[in-house]
Structure formats: C-alpha cells, structure tokens
Length: 156
Ligand code: FES
Image 1: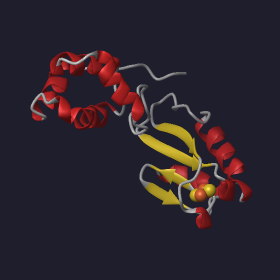
Image 2: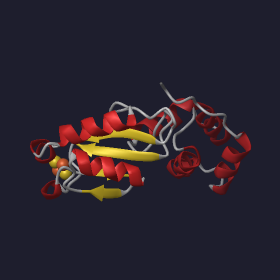
Image 3: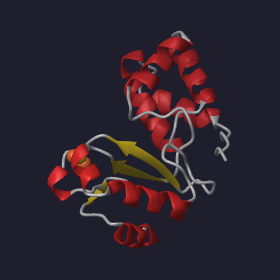
C-alpha cells in the first residue's frame, strides 16, 4: 500500500523560504530543506514555494524531478539501496534483495506500510570488490548474504 501524502505546515514552508531570503537562486537549497523536513517534496509545499518565489510551478517541478536526491512521493524514514551492478550480481545479490523484500514485505521501488523503509536498487555503488553491497541510509555494508542482511535489518 502507498504511504499517504501528509498535511503540509505552510508556516514551516514559509520559514524555510524566508531563511533563504525568498531568493529563487536558492531554490535547490530550499527544496533540500523541505525534503529534510518531510523526507520528500509534498505537492502543497512545491506550490507554496512557487507562489512565494513568484516563479511558475513547472520551474519548481523541473528542479524537483531533475535531481535524483529529491522525491515527489513519501519515502521511508530509512532508505535501503541494493546494488544490482554486475559485480554484485555475480556474487548473488538477487538472493539478498529477495530476502529484504520478504522480510520487509515490500518490493524494490516501494516503501513499507509503516513508513520505516524505502527499498531501491541501483546499478553500481562504486565498491564492487566488496559486493554484494547494500547501503542503509548513508552506510555501506559489504559481502552481504541473505543471512547477514536479515541480521542487519534487525539493527536498523
Ligand atoms: S557492482 Fe555493486 S558496487 Fe559495483
């Protein structure tokens, strides 16, 4: 099930915008702060940003969709990135991914019903020698096995 969009506190959005001097040049930084507040960019927040900066909404959306770090849908409190690159693939990352999907009851690309985890796949995390790699939030975990990842998830 998809996590519901949450209500946006317009005063909080205004104060983020004002902290950035209502300056359209600082749009990326404003969006970063909105995302750290909500863990994604709610549509109402983007509308408010466009209104206060007096720019077309499409301009705000084009920045929000250009950078992969931004998300337009609610994300979990923790992010899990599983590397499906060649080196990790040959070392059995599919079984690791399958274990995570079963344990968290979520498919890659989704967020758990309780809003705790968003599970995503990537093509290479740049640490191929340590594959299979799973990244939880900002931490890399190498040489993952279904067993190890299961224990890892219990510690998050
Ligand atoms: S292929 Fe997985 S880290 Fe490079």
